[in-house]
Length: 175
Image (cartoon, rainbow, N blue to C red; front, side, top):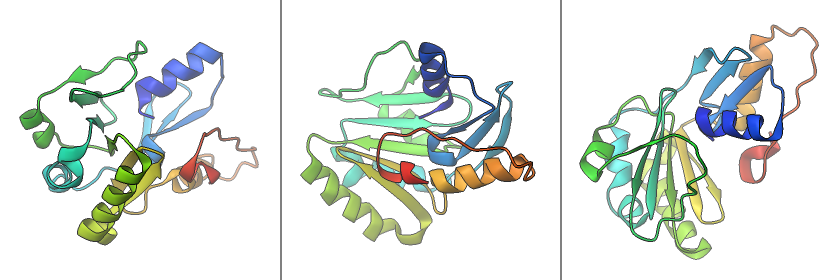
């Protein structure tokens, strides 16, 4: 999740935190909400991912940076309107966004999602790290996943022996 979604969740459930690993480990914040680490994808990948075949079939684009969540919504999008702030953008603006930590694409079925996941892996190879979750694909730069985010967090703690607890729901949450 992006920063605002994560803060919304921790606040809603009253979960205290020392660090937040957001957008699949591409951004890490401390307890004061200060950005400590940021790993963005190559800006040239953004328009390429958002175009055929995988991008144009997506119900919405969730374009997350450390600064703001941007959304391009198509008819049929199921993106939840849960009080999390985001900027709704048009297709042209979405293609021009820079400094993104993650692009998330959404599909109508797991089968369709699987086809586009394979297509993205074939088209972009080692340049991206796609994380599939049922009908969505989160795309980060190569080498970025929740496990590396947790490792970065441990390194920021300078091996002080503190325990690390992470919470997740599927896919690359196994850390």
